[in-house]
Amino acid sequence: ESLCDHFHESQTTMDPKEPGYQAVYLRIYKKVVAKVKKELKDNDLWSLYEELELPLVTALAEMEAHGILVDPKKLSVISQELEATMEKLTETIYAEAGEEFNINSPKQLGVILFEKLGLPVLKRTKTGPSTSAEVLEELSDHPIVASVLEYRQVAKLKSTYTDSLAELISPETKRIHTTFNQTVTATGRLSSTHPNLQNIPVRTKEGRRIREAFVAPEGHVLLMADYSQIELRLLAHLSGDQVLAEAFRSGQDIHAQTAAEVFGLDLDEVTDEERSAAKAINFGIIYGISSFGLAKGINLTRAQAQEYIDSYFLRYPMVKVYLDGLVEQGKKEGYVQTLSKRRRYLPNLKSRNYALRSFAARTAMNTPIQGSAADIIKLAMLKVYRALKDAGLKTRLLLQVHDELVLETPLDELHLAAHLVKKQMEEVYPLDVPLKVGVFYGPNWRDVKSFDYEE
DNA sequence: TCGATCACGC
DNA sequence: ATAGTACGTGATCGAA
Image 1: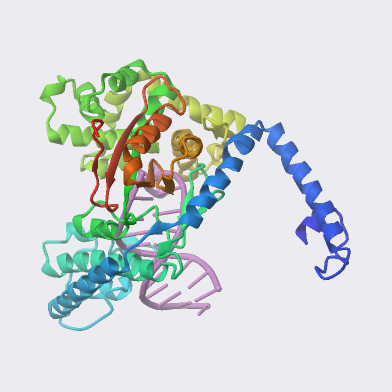
Image 2: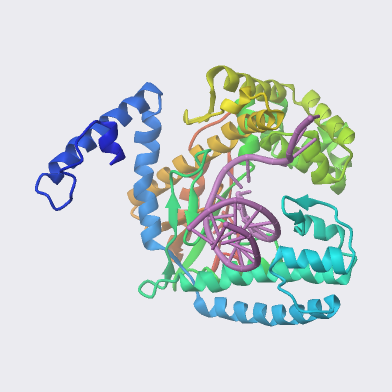
């Protein structure tokens, strides 16, 4: 109806059962196509559509239809263990609280922690004292808080990752078929729903167990390939900073090298702590840094964090020029863009509201980096998809997780497929610095080992 | 039903 | 004075 309005067409014949419906529909449709096509061409986005997003539809559709094999028995074992742990923790928490309450309710938990037990309120949300993990970790000297943190972790795993996931296994294929959404993110990344297979736990040992349930069928292995530091490599390329570029060409640990530059050390003098601080700085640079955010991330005063940032930009001067230029360009043109010319409009760069304006500035710095990484892996998916087809291999793409591809490969194709995937991903779009891809394989998504080129 | 909070990934 | 790291999805609570 809104299309009819838009094109000043009559709606009176728009009943699908009417004989004229198809003709009216087609007339409107053609107008829409012409309009959108012109808009894309006028904005230099036609090749992004025709050469990247449109052909990617086929690859994604095949990935969704094929699905990834999931072992329900493993999920059920994990679920039962989590259930037992939750019951124990629930009893412990009730005993420590001196009463029963809904631990899942931040409101009820807040009453127990901050009123009954008198713990200090370190941070508030709109609706009351915050009970986020960040706050609870500060209070975890109290035994109930440690138990609540553990309860939260276990409850999350059980509700999101064992019980819900098991329900989504198709009875026909025994597989889970996610939906990849190509048109929801502001940066050009994909998203995944029903279920989201882009946020399966990996960081903790307990969480990682979920990945053990994602398996390869008989005679196959899962093959994983991930880009190493793709966003920082893109920053080196896009900014033209030769110090950063040289760091990647040298092949050494990038965070240790950043630490050496920022703290004025030799590479072999860098301690774990300094490396970890440098990692937080690199992380902050990609996300559009603020001294406040960095200070919070690595427990520094704001002034110290600002010194680190100043020192970083002194060592990588072109990065500073580049990021400032993005904000300037965003203000002037109204948008920033990625390698593929994908745009993000940022009207708030001109807002009088400081919060909105600085948020937009960080977005202006992050979007070309994150979005260009998305462009590159999408292009790599197409190249891998076509190369596998051309080589007549049975290896199939299963998942994309932002900087990682998951495939399923018959054992007798492992060697060929591993080399093909690595080559296509690394050579997809030559930059001023090399793109490096790690390749892993194994019987499930958790127990993978590095692919050895002798194999 | 929907906003808020929390927690998982990159 | 002015918030407080980018981008997502989902479970749960509790008010409407």
